[in-house]
View 1 (cartoon, one colour):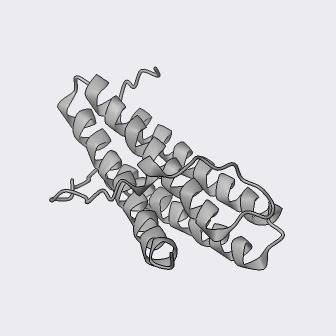
View 2 (cartoon, rainbow, N blue to C red):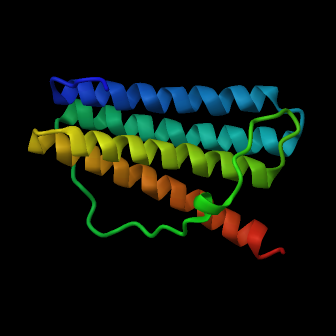
View 3 (tube, rainbow, N blue to C red):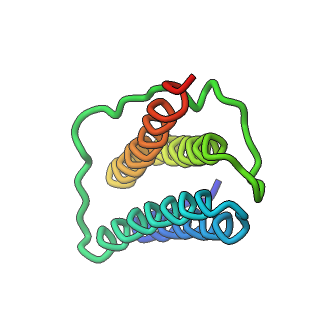
Length: 151
């Protein structure tokens, strides 16, 4: 596992991870043949850009606040089958892909918080994990509202 020596290391890591997510969804948008799916992926990329901007602001201002409260987990991503991105991907598959990606990011930040002995870094990792948990919840709610309720 990568060793972080400073908050800047953590933030650079997180900023790069968000940029990778932006690139991932942007590439899927360009790859998709379905116009509706192109829009979905562009929207996902936009969400990731907002996350990156938030991290850049934290880095610049040298402050962050851990949001209070617990983020609800519908656990939908635990019960859906993994999907691979394809040019003709359906909206439900795109939501599954997004849920799984956000869940992986949550787990990474949680693991990094557990590995950190510095309380400031631990809190920053926990804050980032909570943010990813919120993103996953957004996709789970979308999946629940538009996919599960239709069936």
